[in-house]
Image (spheres, rainbow, N blue to C red):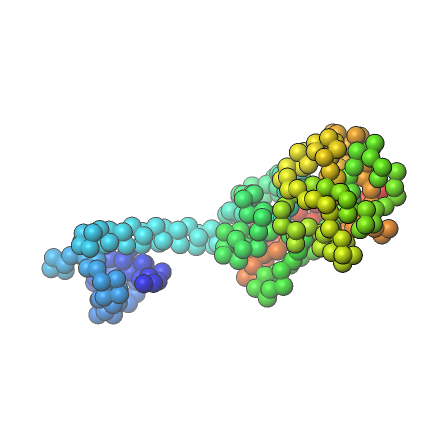
Length: 305
């Protein structure tokens, strides 16, 4: 059983107008056509949705309240569609509305709020909402419309998504200053073989170090431990529970950075490029385009050792 949005819009119109004739007028269709659609839906659901009293229509309670459930669902869907149309209309007409954003890595939430504060000062009519729960997989909610913008370093190859490069950062190994690696100019893949690697995600395919350096060399760390909070990651490194690989700029922001040493990974360093990903049909929305521009200016950059 599959109820479509147009069918729910029809049910909502009949509930609000009270007659099929008035609902047909509201939906700009003929009364016979709407009556036919209603009969088809009732047949499809095997439930009588409305009680007919002359021309008047009221929701029936037949079928253990299925009629009431369909009517409530119809109201909820129509109200959400109205909100969506309003928000999109506001965004297309200028700088009004709501934009929802998430990133592919928790470290970006260290600099993102300050960037959004600067955007809010320039565009007070646009509310930007951060959805950290989408961090594990921001592409999926981006595609289903839950997100408007995702900051990603593993850009998906999809024709329905627009990508704009934002910045590049360097990933460095972080160890306590007393660690044997602290005196090294750089680390190689083999150096990680006997280490416990502390990282933000348990999914190894999302780890740039493992994907781009270790696996091509046929090396894996002795152990991988996932810890989402950067402060907790560094606390574990400081307690000599393992080493981590994080963006160089993150270490520079940490008050405890004097206790650690950042060491390059490979002689040339390990870098990743961040992109702003958005649905193609939304890429030219004035507010969204302006937000991407601000993020590009405010994002951290790769720095030399």
